[in-house]
Amino acid sequence: MTRPRPDAGDLDLARSLTSISARVPQLRGHWDAISAAVEAHANAPISSLRLVSGRVIHAETVTGSSFAVKFGNPSAPLAGEVATLQFLANAECPVPSVIATDLTQGEPEWIATEWAGTRTLDAFLGECNDPEADIAGLHLVTGVAQIERAFAQVTRRGVPGAARNMAIELFEPWASHAVDGLAWLFSTNVTEPLHTAMDRVVTTALSAPMTAGPLDYHASNVVVGNADPSLTIIDLGSIGFDWPGRRLAQYAMSVRSGVPGGRFRTALTPASVTQFAQHLAEIHGGDLVSSIYEVDAHALLIAAIAATQLRAVDTGAASPERTVGWGAIETRRTSLRPVVLRTLSSDGPANDVREFLARN
Image (cartoon, rainbow, N blue to C red; front, side):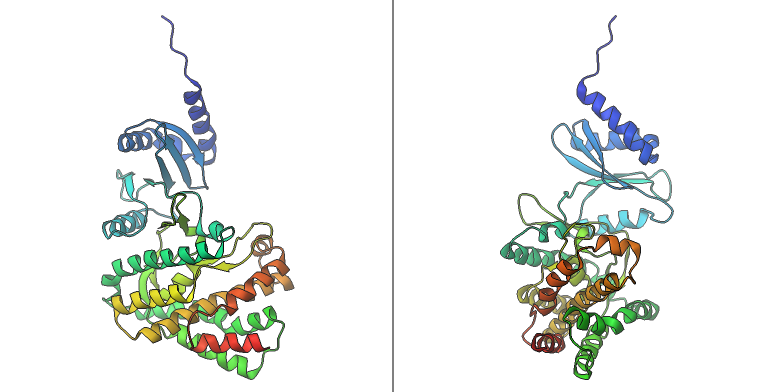
C-alpha cells in the first residue's frame, strides 16, 4: 500500500517546527498540547509558525486565524501574566485573550493568546501623519484608562510605602539630571530660572498619586490594528505601583531604538492629556487641573530623560546597547526638541519650562 505524500504545507510546518525548536527547545516538548489547544480553539489546523522573539512564536491556521505562544522561564514566569490577562479581559480592557495555557504544574510553561498584530505603536508613530498620531493618542488614553479603572480596586487598598519609596528612589537620579539633558538638547546654559522651573516639574510629577497597573510600559508594548486605529496593550507580566501619567507618557513615546535614522515622537496632545486627566479624576477623584499638570509634568520628564540619555550617547557615557540603538544623534536631537516643546496644557509647571527653552 502506497503511503500518501505530505503536501508542501505539511513539509513547511515541519521544517519551521524543527528550526524554531533549535532556538526554543521548549516548543518541541509541548508542541502536541499547544497545537491541539490552538487548533481546537480555531477549529482549523495550524499552517505556519514564525519565531517572533526568544520567547514568543506566531502560529497561523489555514483559515487565517493567528495566535501568540509565549514560553516562561525562571526570570520571566507566566502565572502572573495569565492571571492579569484574564482579569483585564473580564474587565473588557484592550488586551489579548488567553485561549490556553499549560496547567499541569503550578507555574505554566507556556501560554497561548490571541495574536494582537505586528505593528507596534512605536513603529506606527514612525510612519504615520499627524492626524493619525493624534487619533492613536486618544485611543491609547482610552485603553490605558480602562486598565487604570480595572486596577482601581487594588489602588483603593492603599499604595505600600515601600513601593512608593522605591519608585521615587529609582526615578530621582534621572529627574535630577533632567535639566542638564534639556540644556544640552537646546544648546543653552543651566541657569537658576531653568533649575527652579524644572524643580517644580519634578515636584509636581513625584507628588502625584501612584496607582496599581503595568510596569513594563513603552510604545513597543502597544499594538496598532491594521484595519482600524484600535490598540492592544501587551506584555503585562509585571504589575505594580507607579504614576499613571508616567505610564501614559512612556506608552505614547516612540523612540525607534535600533532603527537607522530613528526619531522621537509622541502621540500625546492637549486633548489626549485632558481626556486622561478626566478619566483619572473620575476613577480616583481629585482635582482635574491638578491631574492635567501631573500628567503634563511626567510627559515633559519622559522627554527630558530621553535627552539625558541621548546626551550620554553623544559623550560616550551610554551603554553599548544604547549607543548602538540610538545612532544618528543629530537626527534624534532634532526630532526630540518639538516633543519637549509641544504644549500639552494651557499653563502649569511644565509650560514654564517650555516657555523658557523656547525663549532661549
